[in-house]
Image 1: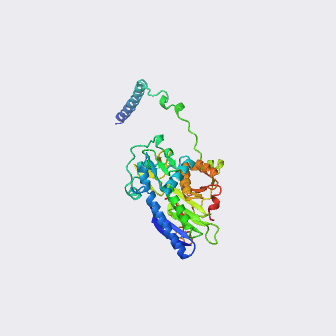
Image 2: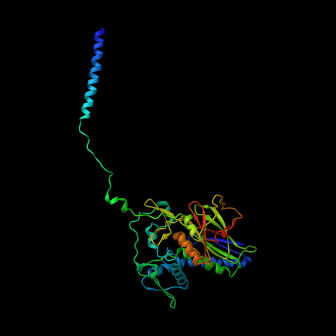
Image 3: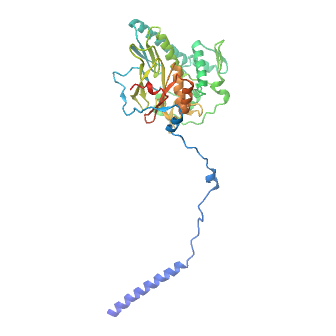
Length: 95
Length: 309
């Protein structure tokens, strides 16, 4: 049985090696895939030169520096109760 | 100080006056009668009002009452002072934005999507209005309709306060946030007026201490509705004929007259910082306080001094 077992192992190893080398050779000589893009796509209609240049929008703080408007301290963190009996009756609001 | 409240001009009106009981009561009754009569004159929601008659007569000379003539002439003057940002002729745009029914209906059902953007020819602008002071006549361009809602409310509050002052040395009329104060309360150096938080009507953002004169607030948060998935409000920017895109949620203006305060508040809300700078430089007796999305306050140089600590 021993010579038969050795022969079977040698046959499996040899056929595996030959199959691997055959596949390598086949792929090495196969046709290359088609080239889809050689350069990044650039549509003339969307080229960077045609985009409008926008001015940065000034923040309220920036506007505040040059104008006579000034920021007042925020007091929204401590709203007063509208129903406070000491609160004045006159009230201004949008209508 | 005695107070009297009633509903008129689609809002709550508060009268305040110091003095002997009978005199103050008489003053209150006269003021209420005056306000209700002027409301009937200036409303656009009644076909019987004098304003509706003026709109129906567009294209022809219209002989106006002294009150309508005075208010339209004042509106024309303020239209020029605000370089058109205050425009009583945005009624068509307002209706196109969906405000062609009551605000209650709009809030419940929304408004149909706009089918067009209003483009108005030059001859159909409010500036094409003509006034004849000698014969007290007004001529609107044919096809133009005007709405005097906000300015009328301020003007009526001012006139009612003037009438009330015949009975009381210290009195005020507050018509839904447009308030006119005459004299000063006994022992006080100023009138105290609460400033409502535009983000939450139940909250008071600040208490203002104001001299005799007037205060008015415009806000984009009060009358809002949905149109085609977009949030709309009732303050139309005449430049775009669409609801104004504003940096601020509300603007409160302090000026000698309530009609002027109402108009300046609206113009600053629509025009933003640039218009606020221009108007406060032009009119030294104008002060303003604006509230932004975060509840932060902005204002003119003396605006801070108006806030009671």
